[in-house]
Amino acid sequence: DVKVTQSSRYLVKRTGEKVFLECVQDMDHENMFWYRQDPGLGLRLIYFSYDVKMKEKGDIPEGYSVSREKKERFSLILESASTNQTSMYLCASSLPGLGSGANVLTFGAGSRLTVL
Amino acid sequence: AQSVTQLGSHVSVSEGALVLLRCNYSSSVPPYLFWYVQYPNQGLQLLLKYTTGATLVKGINGFEAEFKKSETSFHLTKPSAHMSDAAEYFCAVSDSGTSYGKLTFGQGTILTVHP
Image (cartoon, rainbow over all chains, first blue to last red; front, side):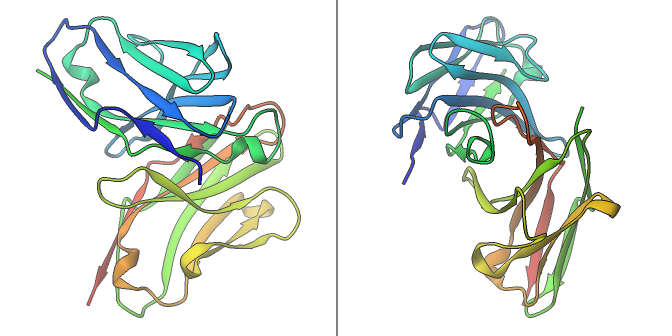
């Protein structure tokens, strides 16, 4: 089975802190994603990457950046955390290329971030 | 741009009753459609998907969904609810072309199953 591992399940940070959320997948997937999940809003795409060092903005990239130095690892960075970034963050990966296989996402368990 | 609307943020059924979770989408190109389920304190897992071919799609745990192009719908059903079906369900859509797996999700529907 594909595994997507998010290193931190729960984090509590203070306003203005720099926050790193780490995600590792073990099945050689080229596509990786960061989504944010909020009640009543579903999942919203923050950033995605289709190759090492490649990144594309999603629907809500403001206040976030990402890093993909290795194929298996995709990091989400909050340069200066704010209270409105309190949320559940979900990492996902999928097969390379286009078509139906690339659209089947495998998710990690999530990282719940609280910013005080 | 794509969008997904799930009708009803909360659905409550009795054990053994029919489950119907509604999903409507908009897409400018032929869509790929998905249902994911999220159990408490877990990530999302794929229930079923429609890409091409047969419009009635069967998934895990007895769920199925039917793609109706004329109605732009992809409703999820299960004939008989089980207590273990209690979870949050998400409908999602992506373009069949160049999306690199970028899914657009609906708002989610929380399913409660009563004994």
